[in-house]
Amino acid sequence: MNEEKKFSTGTSYWMDSVTLPDFPSLEETIDTDVGIVGAGITGLTTAYLLAKNNIKTVLIDANGILEGTTGHTTAKITAQHGLIYDELINHFGKESASLYYKAATDAISIIENTVRDLQIECDFSKEDAYIYTDDEEYISQLENEAKAYEKLDIPGGDC
Image 1 (tube, rainbow, N blue to C red):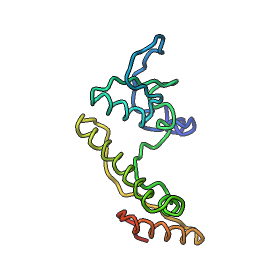
Image 2: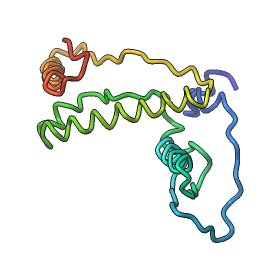
Image 3: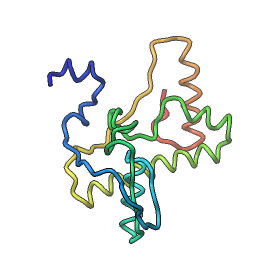
Image 4: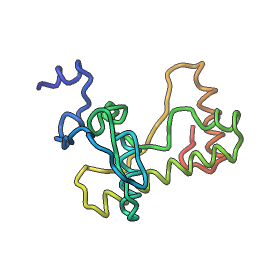
């Protein structure tokens, strides 16, 4: 499949460059401690962590592995989700915004540790993330986000 075709069909490069296993449809009752619905990054990670702790876990999905939202992303993992922290502080308070950031960074650590521990060859790397604009009206929002980073002690909130 050529690059132009990949782009036009909406298939992400990373999904188009790997072969994932197929599993048969569930046809009988399964006895389990935990059932997880959804084989995206959250479901897979949860199932892995539970199974790693000897908890009998079943993961099911109506489609294949990573065929939902996760499979249509760029595979970028980040705690920087646009201009979210100023909004979180304003709507839910500093403590909740801080918990959101901690949860996001903890998730990144889990992924990084899993890649390292299982020696997964996936080109995992840490890179800087940037928010920028060429629109004068957007600058004040960026400045507010930088202030939110300062309030939450998030590195990199420089304007």
